[in-house]
Amino acid sequence: MRYAMVIDTLKCVGCSDCVVACQTENDVPIGYCRDWIAETVKGVYPNLELELKSERCNHCDNAPCVRCCPTGASHVGVGGIVLVTADECIGCGACIESCPYDARYQHPDGYVDKCTFCHHRLEKGQLPACVSVCPTKCMYFGDLDNPNSEVSQLLKNRKHKTLAPEAGTNPHVFYLI
Amino acid sequence: MQEELFTSGRDIPNIDPSLQIWHWPIALYLFLGGLAAGILFFAALFYVLGKGKEYPAAVKFTSIIPPIALSIGLLALVYDLTHKLYTWRLYTTFRIESPMSWGAWVLLIVTPLSFLWLFSYYAENYPKTEEKLGLLKKFKFLRTFEQFLKTNRIYIAYALIPLTLVLGVYTGILLSAFNARPLWNNAILGPLFLTSGLSTGAAAIILMAKTTKERHLFGKIDLGLIIIELALIVHMIMGYFAGSQVQLEAMELLVGGEFTLMFFGFVVLLGLIVPAILELIELIGYKVPVIVAALLVILGGLIFRFVMVEAGQLTRFLY
Image 1 (cartoon, chains in turn blue, brown):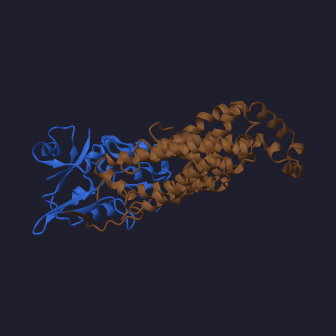
Image 2 (tube, helix red, strand yellow):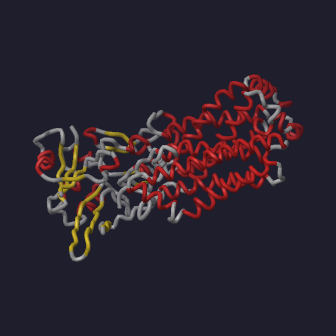
Image 3 (cartoon, chains in turn green, orange):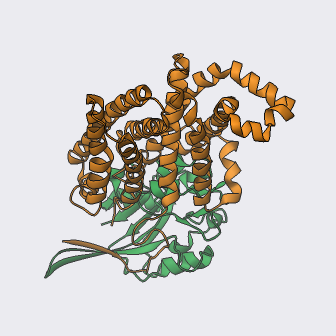
């Protein structure tokens, strides 16, 4: 099993519902967020192109944060989800330095926190909070190892990209373009 | 034109707008770790070569610096952790891929060894303190322990040579292992920080040296190290030059960007070139206050760590 998220940038309207849903679901402290909306404007006026997308930890296959963690607090869990065990984390910040996506932050309680693909919901057969609330249904979640899953089919049929693939991390959040 | 912004109001402390996870304690520690590694390396090397009597500053007098430097450095490291109560977790595992794990274990061995090295020279270095305190007289076990250390000093020295090299290289690799920070992500950083550490170590020995002979020898060693360091810096800049877009952007911080004066003015010119010239003039035979050259090298090494830690965190892949 290999979990992946697919986000359709053509359907995303940047409403930030995913951000709020995540903050509520995961008790993210005020002022912090595990996911966020990025708005990219390209081109020269009047020929402008706007791209909206929801970003988060990419749950990389070659995760630099897991590699550099001195205690093993950062680890790869079931389905390739990158997780942090809070009471093994010393708060050294190495994983934050190592992440090309700046997807991790120091929780006010000291340990490092990040998106977990809502693995506590997955265990109950539910979708991640962000995916389940998206009003435009632009987010998809599923198993890449299953060729018939929704995410596999979307990636097979649609043009897509990942963030900073040149960082060599092999990210598992895909953006349909 | 490309402009990217967060509309969800992402404003995470220490990450937005620019990454500031590692502050002055890390830079200070990288400097102190390198300095201690440099001094201990020379102490162990000259002891193994049997030159302890000829070069007492290197082997004996400077032995007070590494334990203090490492202690302050370790305190700074722990101070920078945000989940301090779990620091012991470093020592329940060894992670071969993590430079920080290597560093934690090497420090766990080198720091006590530096204290043992100092203690083995306690009576020789500080006879007046011993007269006042009378530690060795009062406590028999300390006397036995000191004798034991004296007879086994050579083994400590043998252990210290490879360990201090690992410590010196690790201070650089700690940064260079981060692919996400293009300024740090180059293979030269390990050898460069090691050379800089050895050079500051040699400078500290020059400061403590009492004979011209020892000052001259370490002046020569320091001069050689400075030349290697300059060559490595040229290589580092060339590496950025030939690198990808993110590395070019990283280089701009040092060449023409906001860290230009700090890097070329304070680190390269005042911290390397000027002391090299001063040491050269002294070697030719003119009287030059060597203290100035040695202090400049040490100060340059400190500023170098600060520049690299601060500037590196400004470089990234996205946004």
